Length: 331
Image 1 (cartoon, rainbow, N blue to C red):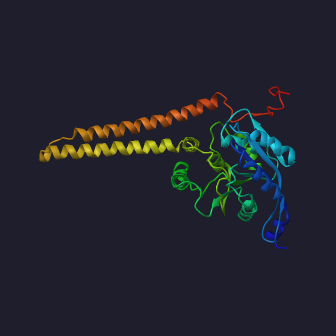
Image 2: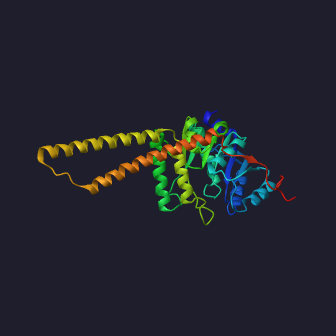
Image 3: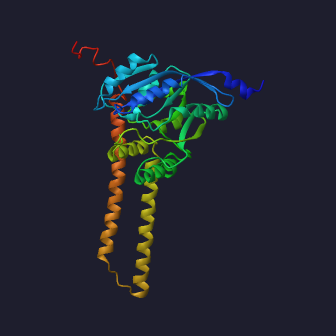
């Protein structure tokens, strides 16, 4: 029997982790789609079973908690995880990964943009390429504003390889992760970690699966410009000390540039009687250099803050019981 065909005969178990912040409008439909994907098999695709759907409540402002309780009662595959407060998408995802039990872990957003029918495609890519981690990549332009799409492309294709020092072909929140890798990562991840950067530390092979992303199932996106900026800052800081080295190189380059310009001006003054003028340009140069110094100091301050939060034991997340069932319940 062909070896590749034999590996597809095995039924692979999958835990789906969904961080929930504002899922009141979209979560029920997404869970129903996942329930329909209990077992999948064909001559070309591996068979899989959605063993559990882990919904991680991240302290959102809507009535997602009520919907999660309802789904948990209706579907035995649904497991609810409750966080003590809002810790952010990456921390909530890691909390769900720590609670997962299956061979593979799929992470996806609550907004319905990620189509569950492509989970077999992710698994097929992982098995064929022997990848610990597979990202879903949109075949077409993602259904966001052009500004967000441009910023996303710049971050994924230019900024991340620069700060990490190695090429990551693509990353998104729609991922398939080997279960043992995901659970181990969730056990040692620290405060303010950027999940995809942390994954790059531990995985051996990264695969890419081309899929179709759907429009979000709600009128307003759950990501504001402020939250996306925080994601970007966390990405840079958790990438290691490479941003500081880049800042040092820029500082050294600025010093030598100033030295060369000063030498040119001195030579022209001595040999050709060149009159040294230009207070406006000098003042502008001081502003540029001063701004660069303040920027580097700001980056260093962020690193120090990250170290202080880790040293004081600030947790990445805290899992609690459902508040409707504990001491805070009305019953």
